[in-house]
Length: 434
Image (cartoon, rainbow, N blue to C red; front, side):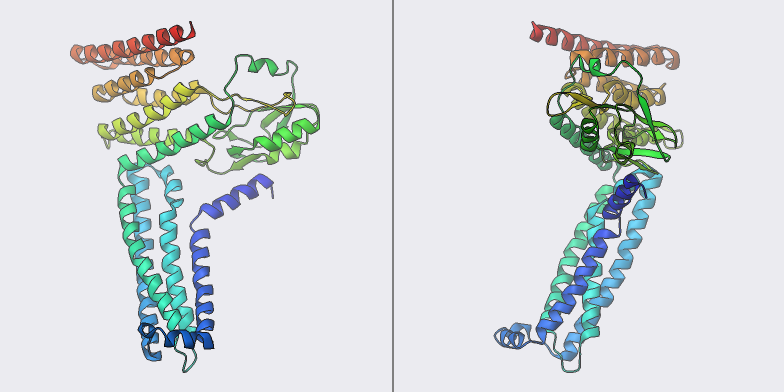
């Protein structure tokens, strides 16, 4: 199996609905065996003689354990049913690609695992009991697990109720995006004007993909090590979020680096994932906004909420600048080129579809212009033309799609204020440079 495929499958296994619930349920089984074994020791007899409030008869213990086991199985069935209902609502009302984030929710996984651990603990203790055994510690642990399960179930319902609220989900996805952008910009050096001069002039040798799918991650350190070992250079074509077919070049190399190592550094999966793919969370919010603006739903306020949150995420990119795509070794020699973040593409991914969908919708068009105006207040001077171009396209669409002259005047006024903010940002940065 391809190493990248194995890594993707292992990551999905750990993040999926099997690993954490199975781990917690296994702990419940081990805890049952341990508590029963302890209850049979002389130390347990001496200890419980000093703790009269843990006194219970064998019949009473079996009754308590049977009640807890039956209740946990009933609640576990209800939790699974509720989870599937939430998945259905999320896919139909918010967006099907959000199911990836719902299945990653550790609250859901912990709830199922905790209920399963309590059920299995009670069931295994009942099975291990011999005639005359009084499982005092095992019963106490079962009661404690049932108590924790109850309060965690209350939290699970609260978390589930908040997750199906579209505004909360929009904010959550964009917080995740902003955190990923902040980590990327903090770890990587800023792009320098002469970085591209380090790219070789002569054509390189292509390293082709052996399978089709979406690139979910590109590991930088193995690529740097491979390029340094052969004193070569690697220019990566693959970047997270892009779809590649078998035989398409993943990279171009100069020198003789290990092609298997290069392919192993590129993780390819059947579906996109939020980890490492910055545009994935942008697409999630764009999808929510587009669905809200569709004729069948026509929910402009949800689209506005998505716009507002997107403007905060894009502003972080416009304000901080982009990281360098050039990776050098410890001696300062250029070794790898990886396109980590392209501001024009990131902004265009969000604003182009939204502009086209809001064509003729005055309320959302005004909020889109306001969002650009907010981003203009914090943008770097080299990114001003990007926002200016989007304002021009919005103005052209307004002239073509808005029949009312008063509405066109309102959009024009908003665009004029946004342009003034962009001009102020440019002059302010020029003054700082002087």
